[in-house]
Length: 120
Image 1 (cartoon, rainbow, N blue to C red):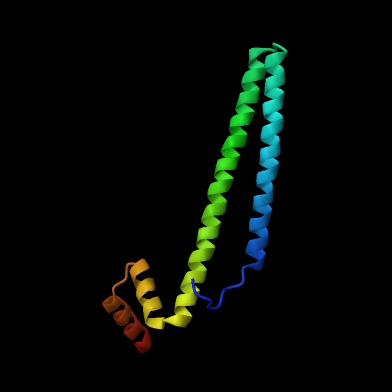
Image 2: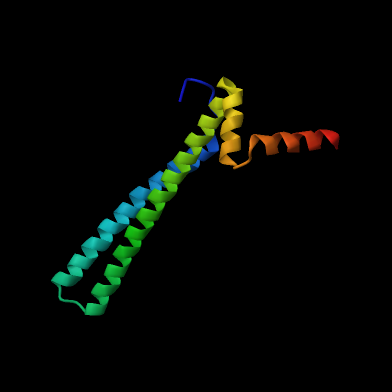
């Protein structure tokens, strides 16, 4: 992306930062669950307790994976919006082409709809 203007995402950036902080909590929880599971195995505890800890560890892994996907999608969306915003200032015709292409509307349909709106 060029050095063109950017849309401010202060609130979104703050929320994204908080989500990234959650990753450290998930990692800490996973470490604790792993240590507890190892202690249970070493002390020859009930198989059910060990299985329950395994389920907890799997839940932490699932939370971590889902959070990573969510953060990545969030960041990609921000980048796409900033890219489109920069296109609108740098090259208006290219911006319109991109929007039409992405919304699967032909230029002819676009002009017909625009003409219809002018008549209203």
